[in-house]
Amino acid sequence: MKKLYRLTVLTVVFLVTSCIENDIPYPTIFGEFLHFTVEGQIGATLISPEEQKVVIRVPDDMDLTNITVDSVAITEGATVSPNPLEVTDFSQKVVFKIDTYQEYFWEVFVETAAEEVNVTQFEIEGQIESVVNDGSKTIRVTMPTGTDLSDLIITSFEYTPTTASVSPDPSVTHDFSGPVTFTFNNEEVWTVNVLHDGEVIEGDQVPYSDFQTWFKEGTDDNSFYLPGQSLNEEIWRSGDKGAADLIIKTYPQTVLPYPSMDAPEYAVLETKTAVGVIAAGSLFVGDIQGSGLADVRTDFGIPFTDRPVSFTTDIQYQPKTYGDNIIDKCDVYVILQVREGSGDDEKRYRLATGWFRSDENMSDFKTLDIPMLYGNHSSLETFMMPSASNAEMPEQGFYEDPTANPTHIIIVFASSADGANFNGGVGSKLKVKGIELNY
Image (cartoon, rainbow, N blue to C red; front, side):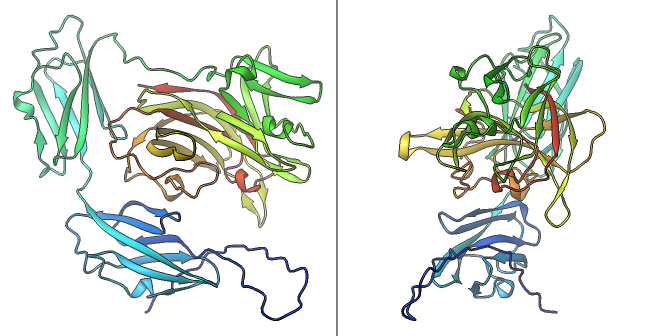
C-alpha cells in the first residue's frame, strides 16, 4: 500500500483590512520540513530551517541507494516534489521543492556513520570499582590508596561492536597517573580517569543552585522572587522578572520559595494566567528583559567551562490539562554550549544535552539522575535537537569536537514544557529542591 506523508498544522493569521482590486499580494508562508525520518536511522533528524537542510544519519553498512523514508511532515497546505515517500536513492543529496505561495528548495542528506561504541566493561587489576558513563564517554576507576597509578594493568576492556578498532593498544597502556583517552575507529574518543579511594573529580556548580538562598524584588504582592542575593549577580532569572519589566507591569509570581524566603525547602513553579496570557512557571540561568506589552527578550545561559557527566535534582510534578484535554508536561534540562564570535557575529553550538520531560503525576519527590549526552548522541530525541530557527534558544547545530570544554551552560526548569508558546495547564506545579552537576 502506498504510504501518504503526514502534514502538520502551521497556523497563519492573515488580516485583510481593505480590498480594492483582486491583485492583492499572496502572503509569505515559509515552506519547510517539520519532520523527516527514514527506517533504521541513528538518533534524531537534524532539521535546519535557516539553511533549508535536513541531515539524517544511518549505519555505515546501509545501502544509500535503497533507503526507505518512514514519515514526513511539511507546512500545512504546502506541496512537495518529488514525493519523499517515493525517493529511495540518497547516495547524494536530494533536493526537494516545497510550494506554498512561494517556492522553497530544501536539501536532504543521508550520511553513514560508524555504529556508536558502547563500553560494557572496563577493569584494572586491583581496582575497587569502575563506572562507565556512556553519555559523556568516560570511565572512572577507583583504586586503593597508595596504588602506583603509573603502572597499572587493564584486565578487562569489553565493548560493542567488537569489530571497532581502538588506539592506543590497551594491553600496553599502563600509565594512568593522568586522564587516558582511547580512540575507537579513529573518531570516537573515550576518556579513562583513575583515582585513589576517597578522591573525587572536582567541578564547578552554578551559584545558588541548591535553592537555599533567595531575594525579593518589589513589595507586598508587587514582587517576584529569585535564587541568589540580588539582580546584580545576573545568574538566575524567571518569567516573573520579565513580566515586571513590561510597560504594563505584572507580578504573576509563578516562582516562589516554599515555605518562605528565609527558610526555603524547595522552589514551587506554577503555571498561571497573566493579563489573559498563559505564564508557565520558569526558572533558568541567563537574563530576561521586557520589550513590550506581552513580549520579552530572553538570553539563556551563563559562562561555564566544566564538563559534568550528569546532573541530579529532586522534583515533584502535578500536571493539569489544557486545550483538547492535553496533559501538561514539565521540562528540566541542562545544555552545554560552545560560543564563538560576539555580537551579531556570535555563533552558538550545542556541546552536551541532559533533558527530562514528563507528564507523570508525582505524589512524592522523585530523584532524577540525568546523563549529559555529548555531541549528536543516538539517544537524543527530536525535541532535544539544536535549531538555528529556535527563537528562544538559537544554535548552529552540534559543535564539531565533542571532547571540547564548553563556554556556557543553560539550566531550565519549567512547569509547562510548551510555555514559550503560551500553552500549558493552569495550576500545573513543579516543585524543585535544587540541582547538582556531577563529575
